[in-house]
Image (cartoon, rainbow over all chains, first blue to last red; front, side, top):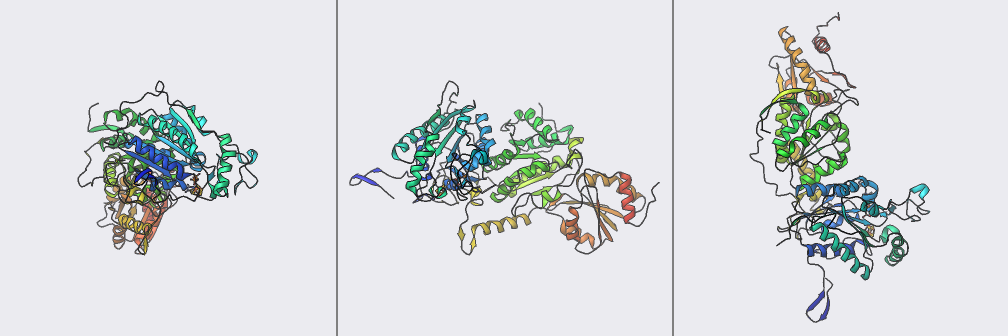
Length: 267
Length: 370
Ligand SMILES: Cc1ncc(C[n+]2csc(CCOP(=O)(O)OP(=O)(O)O)c2C)c(N)n1
Ligand code: SF4
């Protein structure tokens, strides 16, 4: 455990206590570790009495090792609808789906739209690294044009590979969506900002406002065939240029009113 | 609406009524004939059953995911379709069987178009999904039996923590009969202490991070990443345990005129129902013919058929397909007597005259067509 100490014996920074594993299961330099940490911290802050979650078969599936609640692995592309099923059975639970961009934009695209349309109070988290990380870095429909991958050796070409889908912006247009945000956690300033956006997302969900969507822009040095340092440069210079972080649709209680004590807190 | 116990209704609606009475809370039915009637009936009636949700399933793939998620979190759930929809949720069914999550499936196989078919027998009994999993498959012969088996299906699903399929067919889907609803049996059902309720107050059990608070429970132990367990991996251990569980599924069948029969017809579902009156008539004519009707298609009444075959001169399998259950019958008879096959694929069904002519041919009494 890494603990920074200001004065002897007084911890000023430590791992969230629910973060049970010694390390994260992902590759060195993988972006998932950083944002999974702030998710756990914000779960601790929101402290729902019940938490159900599903994570797609993907690199992201290792969320099941660290999320402090009842989490199951779902089929590739099916986390959002799996969690919607869990939430229907446990309406008082905070419900979170974790999906990679392969799972969400390629395999299961229709269901995230249906989830948004339903306005069901679930949080869908997209871990967007532009590639199928788990199967070796082939591009997904989220990859920027020009992105080089084993299946786009000369870079993604719209004529051959189609163009990227602006999912977050499209979901924001759907009335059932209460909140849409995009974050990155590749450096401390982004972590700070991302955590505040995430907190708003959690607040909307705790209030029962409706469908909440959070896109977490993530580095995948292994899939991108880069060193962690190169991947951060590429992330800043290419990926985030097209997908700037921020709140895309802020929660407006006038249109998405809070439901009285929607999600009870753990006492 | 008062809870009438005797109703005159179409089979698909009767099965929804039975589901509501059995405490089903989510009914995943996507429009495909005759299943749209089930979706409509559910939405119309569910308000009168506390806990039953008026949700209308957006697509079959989502229906498959709801089956898993809803049941994994402790709810009672069903899915209804034809073989087409079963094909679509097949991947989810594999997941559900591996994770040992209970649910009920209603299947109304059709032959491409709108007609009777038993062409989805192999899909239901052999390979409802990729992998080694099995569904318990119940095949009713009429509306009343379908209602009774539906009530039981919810019980068996919970008891075995496994999908249970009520295998109907398109003809049954169009049948309208008087049905009676008995209360569902619930004795002996264990509490769903494995369910992913989300409760953060309790200890995290099993799973990959067994020390963590919260709960990775059995639902993802089976589907999660494999861990070594002595010489046998966790995956092998749980697969073997599931295979042993399938062996304990109850076998059920019904015999007609089998005491002194020399020829036995084997048929299930509507095909058996079509044969029955012909059989009665041939018995009156003095022909020693009987019928074995499997009620569970998986597990198959293998031992019973084998034992009967020792006393028979011939067995013939009647199916509305090109020959599927006949393989199970051959396997069961295991050489003890000849096995013949009479199949009507592609949406066809035999007339009583054709059934009679075929049985007479089998017993050596050739009927000259008029
Ligand atoms: C039906 C199905 N098709 C394909 C796969 C293989 N598969 C496993 S993980 C994966 C890629 C996941 O990529 P993504 O969703 O972007 O998540 P990441 O690995 O990048 O976290 C694929 C295609 C699968 N498990 N199931
Ligand atoms: S392959 Fe990519 S997404 Fe997967 S763990 Fe490694 S760096 Fe992370």
